[in-house]
Length: 479
Image 1: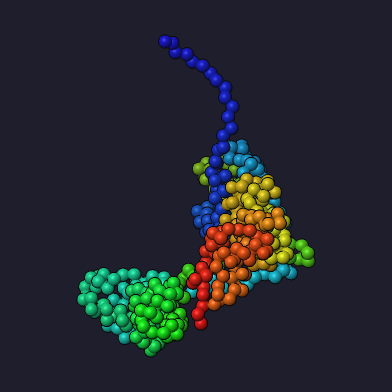
Image 2: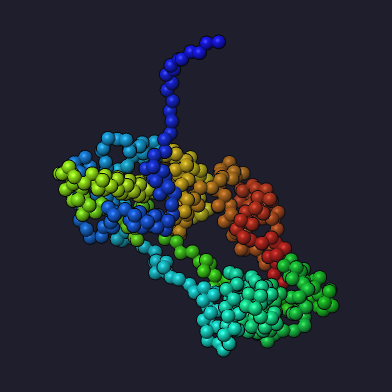
């Protein structure tokens, strides 16, 4: 057996994810709020980065002899031409970095009001504690009440048991029950209940409308209420159906989730990343720069670096500033590239979905990521990243960019229609139905066929559930 040494020449192509490319991809998929947070963190960590005021003149001086500075669309672009070891091929993954493109003026366009974007709603706990501070409680009662309030979930229900609170405060269960009854008198009515039955009963008691039939229905027939099996309630309670319907009318006016109106997460205020305006017969696009920090390299550190370059001293300081300069340059490039990509993708979406913008949701066309990717010359994964958690304000309303991508359903006449358009047609059919004789899914299928849309009953059921619409048995109204 002999050992041999051989040399082989092999050519391979390998993708290397440089830190700069990783940063660019990461920024691309961030939402607007996340991007602003990331910029704030970077500005705190990098002393060379500073925010430029909108009335500042663009500085055209060079950072060093090998760097150039240019300003386009209000964003500074710094291009390093060093030894090339930190460069990567933007064109292969996102797009060549360069001017962000034209952003049309919004001077004469209708801009949505953002006066409520920064509003903060009062939480349920804040509202309850405010009432507690205005009530007469002893110190120990106040501590127990605070424990109760602190253990309320988003719907206003008590998430802890009376025994747990009693053990924590070293008191008897009856004492906690006594305090709990007083807290349950707070607004909103029904708050601090331990289950749905107690919640509804407390609301009826507070309103002074508690009657034996109402109490029996809530205690023993919650399941029948959910399924609207009123005949079974009448049979079990030995009363007429009209009496049951009258009681159900009272119950329907109660709030099963009283804490929901103070839920801090009930509203989402969305700031769009891009605007689409219709001026004449044309749709124009403008990136939303409001609240977005406009970055530049600090003039102070540029001067320090220039002074150090003229001397042979300050090696470590010079290396540090150069490193921070590269980091700042790449962040600015990545942000600019992100904005340019959003602009180009939105421009392509408007082109493909022009009928939707002109005529409404019934004309939304089926579209997949590849359609936009091929149009703008980017990879599908890039389109997916740039359309996630990015919002566009249009004359038709506010939409996530992903909204415009949906599957197609074939019509009986050979054309295709977007799934979102089909959902809208189902919603319209249900909204126009007789509430006393609601349409079941099979009947909706028949009505869709009359509009040249052929889909299965289970597909109608799936779309209805996605829209949060109840089945016909639960949509029926008796009064």
